[in-house]
Image (tube, rainbow, N blue to C red; front, side, top):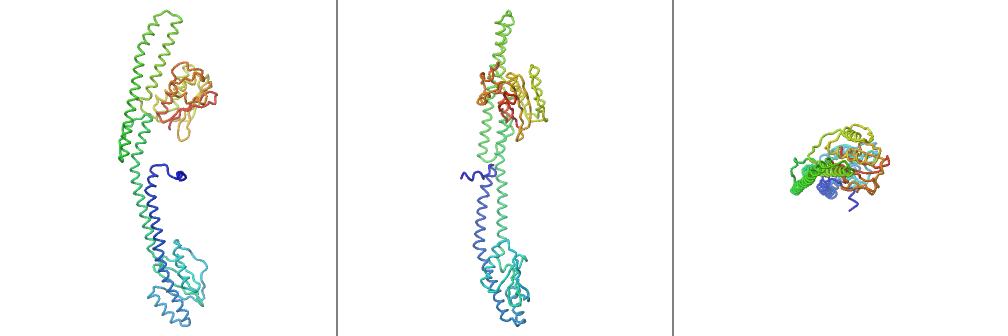
Length: 439
C-alpha cells in the first residue's frame, strides 16, 4: 500500500474526486469490456459468418457458370435484391497488396475469420474506405469478384453508439462530481484561510461557519478557540501592563528621592539599577503587547529598514545598509519595526560592525538579514537563543541589559506574520539573524 502513496494526489479535492470518479470509471470499463467481449463480438461474428456464406455461395455459382455472362448477371441481380450484396466481375485485375486496419481491430479479426472459414480462394477486404459499406474482393480465374456489402450486414453498428453513450455518461457524472465536491471543499478552504489569517494576527470577523455538519463543527470549534486565545492574550497584556504601571510609580518616587540625595558613588549605582529595572519593565511590556490593536498595511520595507538603521546610527553604531530592489509587503509596520530593531540592537551590542540587507527569497518570501562581526552563538544554541527569558551569557559576552526577550519578541512578531526568525553563522564572522516574511 505504501508504494501507491507516492502516486496519490495530496489535495482533498483531488482525493475526493478520485473516490467518486475511479469506481464509476472502473464500472464503465468493466461494462464496456463485457459488452464488446461477450455480446457485441458474438453478434458481429454471426453477421460476418452470414455475409461470408453469401459471398462463398456467389463465388461458387460464378465459377460454375463461368462461360455464361447472362447467368452471372441474373445471379448478381438476385444477390442485390435478396442479400443486398453488390457483385461485380473485374477481368484481369489482381488482389491489392496493402490493407488499412480498422480502429476497432475486432471488426477485421471477425471478418477475416469468417471469410477464411467459408472461402477456399484468396481474398482481400477493406472496412475503412467507405463509411457505410465493406469492400470484399475474391480472386477467381480470369480476374476478381468484387463484393460491396452494407456495413450493418457485416458488423453490429450499435456498438459505437453504446461506447459513445458510456463515455458521455462518464463525462456527465464526472462533471456533476466536480461541481458537488468543489462546493463541499469551499468551506474547508475558507476555514483554513481564516485559521491562517488569525495565526498572522489578522482580523477574521468576516468568517462564518458553512458547509457540511462536520465542517460547521470544526468552524465553531475554531471560533471558540479564537475567542479563548484572544482572552488569554488580553489577560496577559493587561496583567503585565498593570504590573508595569504599578511598578513605575515606586520607581518614579525612587528617582525623585535619588535626585534629592547628595551626589555619591552609591547614588549613581542606585540610579543605574533603577534604569535597568525600567528597561526590564519596558521589555516585559513589549513582549506582552505583541501586535495587539495594529492593522495590516502595505508597507515599503526598504524605507522601514532605513528608519531602523537611522535610529541605531543616532545611538552611535556603525551599520551598513546593502541596498536592493524596492520591496513592499502587507505587514503591521510597528510590529515589524520593533522586531527588526531588536535584531539590530542585539547585533550592535555584540559586534563592532553590523550590516543589514533585504532580498526576495524562494516561494515569494522576503528576507531581512542582520549580520554582525561579534563572537556569534554555537549552532546548538540557536533555538535556545530565541526562547523567552533566555540569556546566553557564556556565548555572547553577556546581555548587559534586559531579560532575554529581544529575540523572543522578534520571533513572536515574525510568526505572527506567518514568517520565522532563523539564526546562522554570518559571513562577517559573527551571527546572522534572518527575518523571513511572506511576500
